[in-house]
Image (cartoon, rainbow, N blue to C red; front, side, top):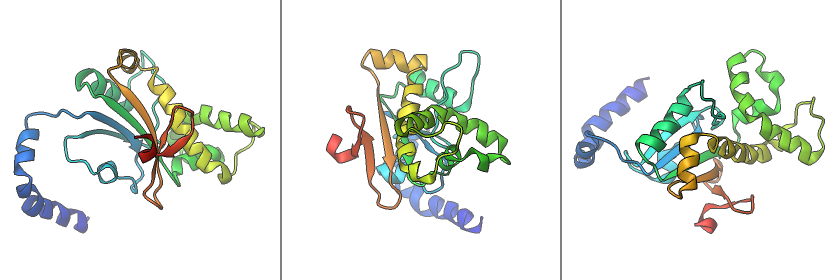
Length: 211
């Protein structure tokens, strides 16, 4: 905590004064163009990866960059963040960003390891369809855990799955259908800094190739 407190002091004395005009503008409201949904993993920093300033990204984070299927009678932090970003802030883009070496996806591969983490196990079940796709693709036994050899594939398939879940949210679907909102699937590679984006052909390619 000492380092964190010291960091706050440096921000207040060195960084904040240099960007006073920006913070004066932000003090009265926000107008981000992008909702960025990513993992809670401490190694993933959306603003660092995208080199964006305060006010440019509306960020929602959770274990496994998961978007639960929309349920009219059930609310939650991710659902409310999506609704607010799309219906109130009118963001123009939504990015769902997974990452390499994801602990949540390791848990999805081996649910036995989550026996002492019941809430985590329940949450990660939102990735079950991604697991099923991989099992069917490779002819794996649906009753057995998958090895971590499948982790890179699952990380990508999970992003695909969460984009599908995203389109079950009425506010998202309505604006996508009108051409007012675009959704994007990314995977960030921690070890190289590379970012892959889901292309129209279903493959993940380097972000700059798809720009």
